[in-house]
Image 1 (spheres, rainbow, N blue to C red):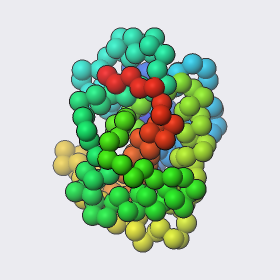
Image 2: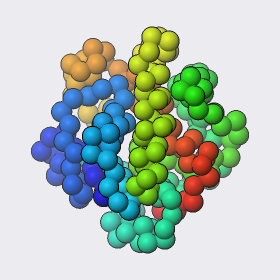
Image 3: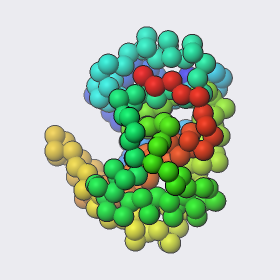
Length: 213
């Protein structure tokens, strides 16, 4: 089953898959919604994914038909970023968020997981946009995402996470009001950017069979 996350009527209109409605922002953004939904409802049979309501607008070359065709190939994971070749996603993140790769690796190690020391990432995923076999998605949430969120909730990483990521949406000025209302700050902290890169590590570690659209 594939879902999309929506926040109100206008964002729901962007969705082509069934919606998961959410009205409150957390520092983890979509990752916490994914985490809570899977913990409560499971992942069902066959393939599972939770995409943003903006997914098809951001990735205009991707269609439902292409996703259905990819599912037929029996891959472990379907990614939508085939255009990235030899992409070092942690080094790239350091260019935007100073010291990010060290923070990411420290969180991963604190969660009892193994950081990836190389640069040749097999799978590139951004935007939490990926679809996997259901048992893989469940394993990722329970044994990777959940422990990392637990670590990020601890005081040990509070100072390093609650900093301005420098990420802003210039075309959405109202987002600052939402951030202040729900997070108590007027910027995006780093929690969601850590979570966004975590699936890449999971699939790299497990050497998953990839279909990249």
